[in-house]
Length: 132
Image (cartoon, rainbow, N blue to C red; front, side):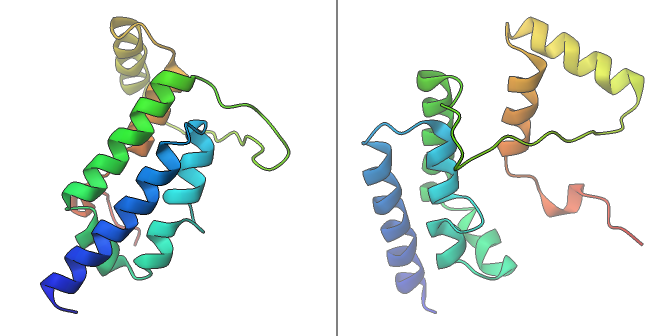
């Protein structure tokens, strides 16, 4: 795929995301429809290499900012049967937990909101340890 075709594809994904954003959905709905497993981004960029390249674009950054703005604007999503909540347990050192708790306090937010914010952020693949 040429650079022009890639740029057009990312602009089309952004356009669709912007149309949904302008409808002011709750952030969970926006995330599900745009960045979720069956969202427009995953459909447009089915393989990991293509997704990694898209994550480097301004369009992806703008979509991430839309999620952040909706989270700020709408707060907690309205719970319905279409998107139940799940709980995960993460083992971490006490020092990391304390640092997260202090950061949440400094940012005047909850641990839950801080952790969700961190989970929504793109991470460099080189920073994730590989399972052996």
